[in-house]
Length: 440
Image (tube, rainbow, N blue to C red; front, side, top):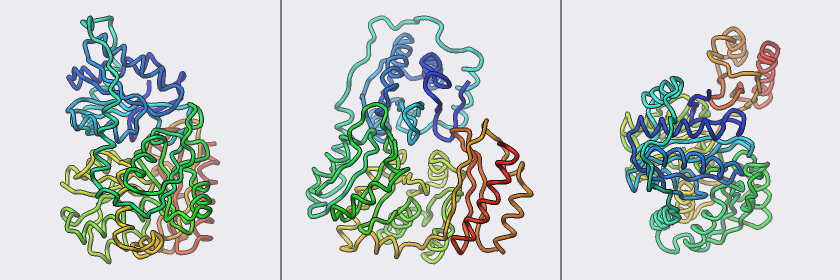
């Protein structure tokens, strides 16, 4: 049985993530959360329609009203939950390829589930507390609600002054995902000139050598068309990676640093703190220290960031991977919201993204190696304690080593930061070899 990872449940469709399992899961979710109305949206994977049909039917059989958004970015689905005080389900495997799918669940108000709620759901599902036949769904049907997506678009457009992005040329890589029709429309409505790539989803090309995890294509497009900057989304739209006018990547650390400094200047950085994860570059910490901004560090995953934001009543957090969370505005990472705020800052500052990013922070060279293993591994830092200690010692006290198991797939990630690129590469490769030798 699948369990909740760092962000919902996720697995290969038809094998780990089946229609039967998904239907059972959402019925238990409805029972645990006590909901009678659920909004469902999905990204562009070919399995999305099958899962939508299965979970909608299961919920209706239990007397739950179902509203279908159709293809919609995860931030838009969370927005609907917040605006209409309902539970919402996003059918997506985020940045994974089309073979995988998953479910992200938002409680009433658009908030992700607490640890306690997830544990209750897993316990009841494991105990077989799932679909037991129809119990009062007579007369209840699903209702198509495309206007919920339009409400999200209108909200984003209203956050920027009319024609506020006039004379700005933005290149977009929509990852053949849920933003394919939404993002170009919103930016064009705000006056920007938009060049769009990878916005023709066919059910199987989502995230395929494109989007936030593969920004090289967008880099070339930005240079070729002379765009001021570019934005690459992932398949469900809750993260972004930017490209400056020179074609250079501006990752989530830089985007977060830019936002933290600007929000401090505006007086909107609540409690003068920003939340990041353990993957955040040392350079970010140095920049925030110089700006006298306190950094709160959490485990990997935007859900961990959200918990810290709520507990500390804070307004800004995010991840190197491009999840940027403006807690006063949204309940989850929102790639398009972050892109609009970045575009507005570029217009207002009259500086290039390259200048803004360079002034915000300087990154340490960082090497990340992803090692696929035969099974999910727990306590990886303890399992390789000696090897990690040796790697840290080789850095001479300057740099950082992080080894962690993925929360969503059978993979171990090795990250090394060092003053020089070659040093980071050597230490990371040595550590990766040691892990591969034992785990295969």
